[in-house]
Length: 54
Image (cartoon, rainbow, N blue to C red; front, side):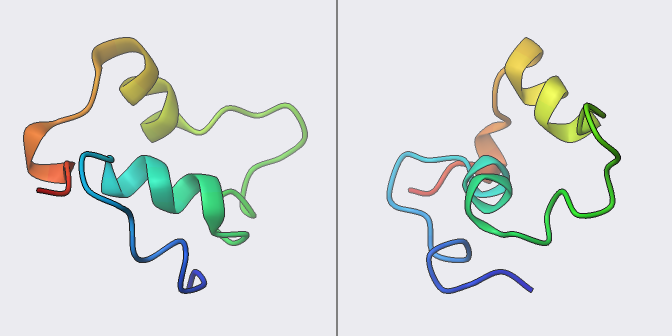
């Protein structure tokens, strides 16, 4: 589980992207130079409205 910063994104930020940026365990399962598919999806297609903190 992520730390307090990772689990409490500020307003107008994507919950998933914020968690993946600040939680050490979010990408622990990835190998060296392996991309995180949810992160790549957000980079290419943007952030779903239901994940944005209001």
